Image (cartoon, rainbow, N blue to C red; front, top):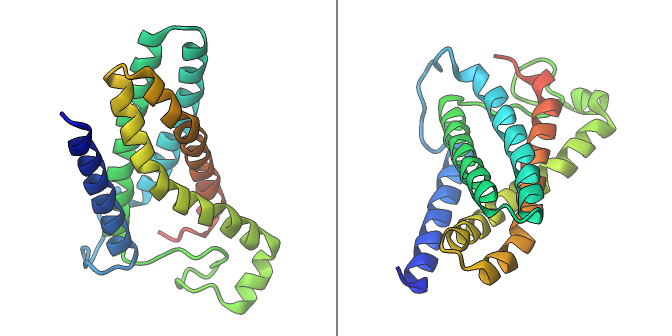
Length: 191
């Protein structure tokens, strides 16, 4: 495969994933009238997957620092697979759930009223301060992950290192902040 093909493939996958997430977050595709009974467990599954990926990324870093390329590669393949499973679960959840959960919505009506926002106070601001970069960086890191993954599998070590210098800290931030976002929004889930 040529670099040109890989770049086009990565760009296509990235655009497709971002488009699907935006379409589902805007509820442009109608989901089922009644969500399946497993739906409320998907956010917890997503947090577990993100937390596991955070740990695997750190352990993978440890092994590459020790010069153990085989374990590093296997851990990154596992992390990539779990992140892919996360993405499927995330998309499924947003397809099945036809309403959003605003931070501070204690009544469960899908709207954080001014009174509810005031009651949430600074925690709402903190939540949004974590959520916004989480979302932006999650979208931005996808092509870096795909390209660094490809370069690593091809043993193009120097190109892999250059990409990972950016991909690793961003991916780690996204996985850790995903868990934090879940823990902060969990009290406001009403399903």
